[in-house]
Amino acid sequence: MIKEFRLPDLGEGLTESEILSWKVGVGDTVSLNQVIAEVETAKAVVELPSPFAGVIKELHEQPGTIVEVGKPIVSFEVADDAGQAPSEAGGPAAGPAKEAGDTAGEAAGEAAEGSGATAKRQPNLVGYGAVVESSGRPARRPRNFTLVEPVEAKPEEAASAEAEPDEPAAERPRSTPPVRKLAKDMGVDLADVAGTGPQGLITREDLQQFMEAQSAGAGQPATVAAGIQAEPGGRETRTPIKGVRKFTAAAMVQSAFTAPHATEFLTVDVTPAMDLLTGLRDSRAFAGIKLTPLTLAAKAVLIALRRSPALNSRWDEEHQEIVTFNYVNLGIAAATPRGLMVPNIKDADAMSLAQLGEALTALAETARAGKTPPADLAGGTISITNIGVFGIDAGTPILNPGEAAILALGAVRKMPWEYRGKVALRQVMTLSLSFDHRLVDGEQASRFLADVGAILADPGMVLTMV
Image 1 (spheres, one colour):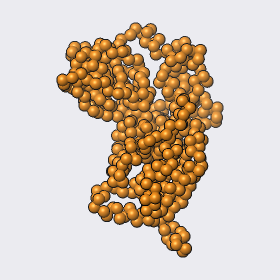
Image 2 (cartoon, rainbow, N blue to C red):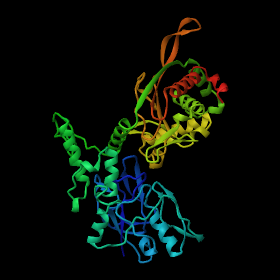
Image 3 (cartoon, helix red, strand yellow):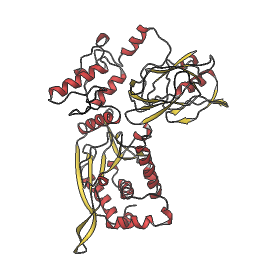
């Protein structure tokens, strides 16, 4: 029996991924959950586990190819009783494009649940993998996973399902969910785009041509087509815009032109904080833990947020509500070979200083290795960017979409500074706070920034704040 594995949504409603490499070849025998490919999404590099045990029959896509969610990438030859398709198990048919959070894992889970089989799952980088052994009770349905293999449909039925919009055509331009998601990320109103697909369906190519026309009309170079490179020794080099760079660009444009940014600056004598850092590094309680100015600044932010919760909130445009978070998922901007990423530390406000130091170290190492899972890149509530490591004193950072504030840490420099009525050589840092002025008033931002500065200038001030 031949089974097709379609590219799942690897998290957060991503619409496409690039095949980086295959770990298997045609004719290879694979087991359940064996890693068969490495793919790059707009947010992270992810390993794909096999949903079937069988023999690789065909690899539909080559490394370097960008594949849309829902398209077949590999075919397996499996035994008749192995890897039961979701549709055969009584589950609903899956379309070529799925909702946010869909992954490869539910295929086997749905099969076991619908057929009455019991199951145990093993975690992997794409959620939960296929069923690997039996237990004594029915399997629970995991959250945020869905089917990956659709029932077969006639070509005309598939085309109709692909083209059908969520609302009547008179109210919304015809397009598929992935195209609508892409248009939203690019800041494009589909009403301005002419569709060339069946019955006026707007395709990805239509969006690409629209953006090229817009760029050309503004006197800017048109978007570079995928795969185009400069000839050796040429005067220019063209790099395809994809992966993290493409996602980051779309997110920053959306943030800059959606949230009204304002930025405030505060220069602080952080000599006491640096002295504290030196003492902690020599302490047995912090042995083996990497402590940096970022660690102390992160803890200062978490403490200051207790007094200024408005900076830990989100503007919900759809429901016209301000959502204030009672937890802190602290985002840390990380420069990686793949581009800028902002993974976040979940429930950072519940961590001690030692735990925060360990979490920051693990976050940086994972990001540099390109192994940050999509879940760690979603759900942030406030962010910090440490531009001081590049020798920069201050800047005007752009908000991470969906967050109310971002704090930039400048370089710690020895400078002449007024200290106890005299001029002394002190260690000084500039803090730059950008905030969404819809959510945060100038007074709230100023008080928050002053609190962070006060803690770094005199760590003992924490006793007056908690």
